[in-house]
Amino acid sequence: MLAEFRGKCNFRQYIPCKTNKYGIKILAMCDAKMFYTSIMEVYVGKQPDGPYKISNSSYDVVTRLCQHIVGTGRNVTIDNWFTSIPLVKTLLSDFKLTVIGTIRKDKRELLVEFCKPVSRPEKKQQFGFRNSLVSYIPKKGKNILLVSSLHHSDDINSETGDLQKPEMVTEYNKTKGGVVVVDKLVSSYDCARNTRRWPMVIFYTMLNVARINAHVIFTSNNPETKILKRNFLRELAHNLIRPYLQRRVPLTNIPRSLQIRLKEVCGIEKDNQEKCCST
Image (cartoon, rainbow, N blue to C red):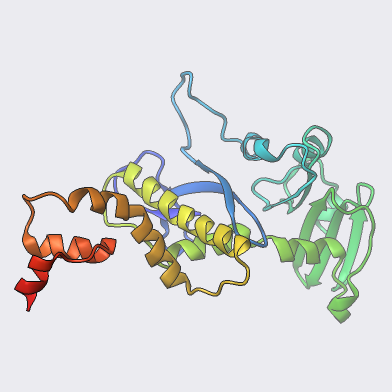
């Protein structure tokens, strides 16, 4: 995801395909069904030498983000910036996690026949690496390369009809949109404010992701309760600020109108004197 920011920052990114284009890049792991964000990491680019310097290679980034789910047997769907054959093998053998993702054609471990399938017609596929790698031609001039440690067969999804899509491709399409959906949810009911300080941009992003996670947890624990997201967020905000407001109610150095409003928000009844004055 990309947190919009146009101020001064050494690791500000420019991504033309994004709506905001300029901002701070945040790498995240999100659930593909519930859209719960379990971990995030700010991409800071090149760093100075020191105790806090970390590697930004795709291999190291993925292994760091997967630390909290090691040994759970889950499947991780990633895009072609992260995917490599060594990474897939490491996650399967050391982390007990399966991986499915698109892979770039310039990877040295790929055969030329997979990268340049000039002789194959449309809607045809070719499997390799014990059926864990597939090259699929959806239309002329386009080649989709996908690797999966979750699949070990060359099964074709019968529901795709004449498209003849392999199971690996349909599974990837079904699970690839977790982070994209969360990015869109962040932009709706956005709590961010205009600022030139990049730490505040990250803080606002954390607040946005936290309220999405709160809504996911609430709906999971209360499946029979129907509540609009707008009403849920309003109630969430009131519950967060109510302790602070209750501490301000007894203060006598604030305007009377503000004191009355504080009591209304906190659900405190007016005393008799206030009721008489109001009539």
